[in-house]
Image 1 (cartoon, rainbow, N blue to C red):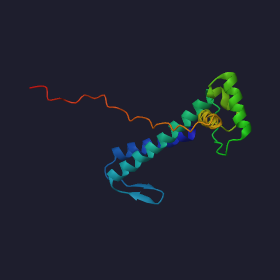
Image 2 (cartoon, rainbow, N blue to C red; image 1 turned 90 degrees about the vertical axis):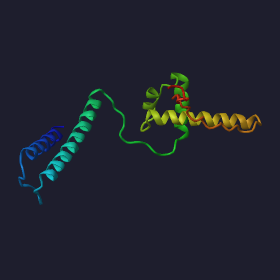
Image 3 (cartoon, rainbow, N blue to C red; image 1 turned 180 degrees about the vertical axis):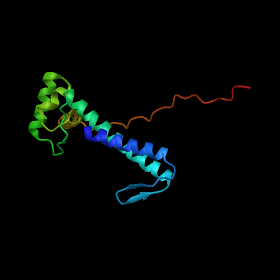
Image 4 (cartoon, rainbow, N blue to C red; image 1 turned 90 degrees about the horizontal axis):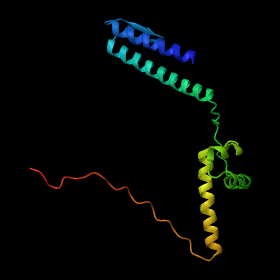
Length: 157
């Protein structure tokens, strides 16, 4: 965090120097910039990049300080039968509280657990329909959103 703050301060100082100097020659490593406009643009870009890094570092630090221990690694492997059984048991015991269920499945996020639960329900419905001899019912696609904006109907002067 301190390194990012120092980079932001350096970029801001370069931007200030560019704004105060007229036609000054600024040398940064092997790049020489003589045009004040180019110098200001480079300094502004550096300041923006440093500020972005600082904001992300600060957000991550705050998240960790609050105790948010979400795993940064996402488990993209196929779901196992044990994981499916765990999801079913946890939903039966806790309800659909995905943030409480996800810690029981290491490497799986609450969103991925919720999506897997929806898929399991669909598969169960299809299996029940097949066992009862009913044809599979296709769900209609969602209706397109309707506009609530009024159009002028020619009323007026």
